[in-house]
Length: 98
Image 1 (cartoon, rainbow, N blue to C red):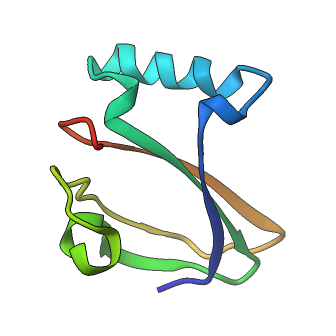
Image 2: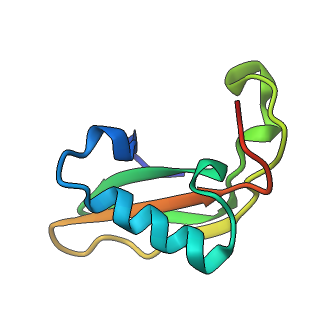
């Protein structure tokens, strides 16, 4: 699909408090607790793109372990024409994951 570098981010690791503020705003808008999701940050290099695909971890329990709920989403991206593309995604579930 695409070649990217990524990491899951935690508000507890952000000493500036910025991610915590963003997480709280998302929780207010969605009316779901912060604990129902995770933040994933990706970097795509110039020339890379992603065709449309469904991204959900519950489909592969052998890799990700058993999941209580899905985070199914259809998405894709346009190619990076110059420089880099940074993307932060808040994956939201209907239940808290253990």
